[in-house]
Amino acid sequence: MSFAVKALEFFIRQVESLDEKGKRQIREKIALIKDNPFRFKRIHSKKFNKVFRVRLSLQGKETRLIYVVLEPNILIVCLLERKKGYKGLEKYLKKIS
Image (tube, rainbow, N blue to C red; front, side, top):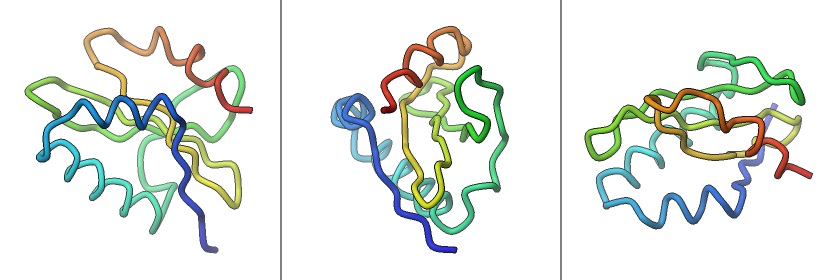
């Protein structure tokens, strides 16, 4: 099945603030997600059942790229710093209409 990748406005603003190395890492991970969106670790959410995360190290910080699979689309939600945990995750997932 072919998936279409879409990004939330908040994620796009987060990526704009990164350096070129970080942007390249994210592009590579998004290509892997598009090939097989179920390859990365699933995380729990109150609102969606197909929420996944990708481990990244951006600018020396452990970061997670969060995405949701709503077939036939993949919605890239946000980047979360690992040290803050997943406390703000539900807030970002509410932005999905």
